[in-house]
Image (tube, helix red, strand yellow):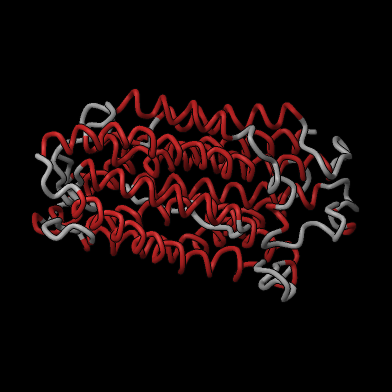
Length: 407
């Protein structure tokens, strides 16, 4: 029961980090253009994430079986993972969650948008390899559908940003072409209202998709310990707790990532913002309808880049875009390494002591990163300040990045 409780708490903590890490996907451009003030923007996004979490549970029971083989064909945990009362499965899940949270917090500290989904899959892959070997990972599907690491992670990571860039670039070009004769002040005002609707749609889609990942993890842990036996359902308290956790995380804001998306990539206007948000919503919802898994972060970032490409006189900060791309590439392996290390530490101590040690490491790492973030704090008061690339500035001045400050 102690280990199960740690898994549930850690899963909800991941859900919370998922919320604040991904708020910028929906609201960064609306905040940057002034369509919404920062605090009302994250409040609206939180409410819609909460509602979205209750709209569907289709992926909740299969998320952990998408890239790792923790379940058999019926959806039940594998028999060899239940021989010790489910503690083997719980340790893998706990270690994977810690890997995901550590990477989410690290990229937040660096102000880099990265995929919470890929961090979760990466952490689970690393912990599974450590606990079950490479055979415990589903690398490819069965040939009839896109599945496994290749289908669920690699292909979407390559295709979704490219599609979003093209859709947003075309949408931005059309917007400015159609409204060419409209005075700029009228155009900006009209599209700011449109941004509220498009950003709301992205928030709703995010809640529908991402909260289910945590629901799946917790439900699998409950099945492993015999606390839940319905393989086709999710306990109500799990739905409610996951919905609340992701909504609270969204309300916290994740201002560092919001600032990068809203001010660091493109100096965005309201028509560009609406084109980007509409493109993100269209790609996410179309992909969900087709059963194609993707990262909302990759889509949103691609859409913002596309809005800059689609406007002739817009400047794109390719230095920041390059750093984001590097973060995307290393997210899965980095989270996997942390997940594997956490599994080895937990297995070394054994029993319920190992999970307690892992949880203690998570608390220490999280506390350190939070305190470190206060050296260059970003919140609703300065999220829209003029962009200064503190990494480039620190290199030119010869000072550590933590001392370079922020505009």
